[in-house]
Length: 74
Image 1 (cartoon, rainbow, N blue to C red):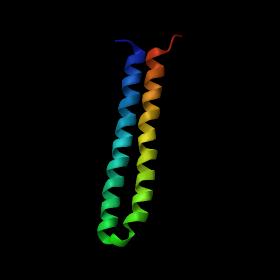
Image 2 (cartoon, helix red, strand yellow):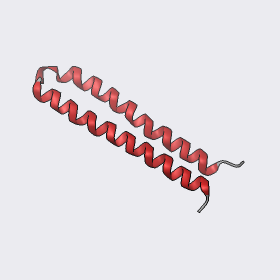
Image 3 (tube, helix red, strand yellow):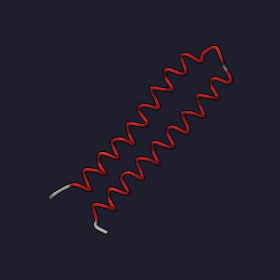
Image 4 (cartoon, rainbow, N blue to C red):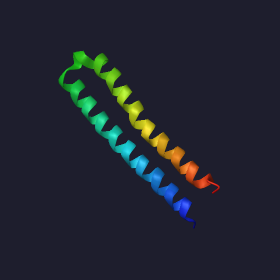
């Protein structure tokens, strides 16, 4: 197994772990906040979805890095 493939696996793995942890924590805190204050659901939902988008972006960036490492011709 070549070095770029190992590096790509590590990149996507760490990116997925980071995004997964961020999304899990965000879900937990959002549901906790909605449970405490149900009237603020619409405001919480907007901020929650924006945070999930940013967390998912981390996973996409790590996928791009992994693809660049695999197909690098240098």
